[in-house]
Image (tube, rainbow, N blue to C red; front, side, top):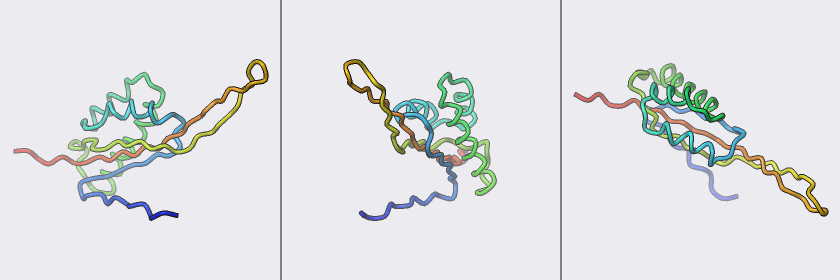
Length: 126
């Protein structure tokens, strides 16, 4: 039951993209998201392109989608975009079992995560 979730309204100079059910734990996804928070979008794309982590490919897709949303939906300047938020959420966990010695069982946990990236157009500094 509970109360309804609050929908955050984006400002006029913001755009976002959302990916759900990424097959990785939120902790591991957060390590990649930390590397791009607060950076220029071009620098963040370079960082993700050369990252050795498997999930960097998924994060790069979501960032490119957020940049495209900013360009096409809000008509923002792509060269002045920065990654203002990269939030991670826990989706669900699939539990599996593996037979172990002496009649015991070993639990295998397969976590999934959500990723939301918000890009913002920075103000012009004189």
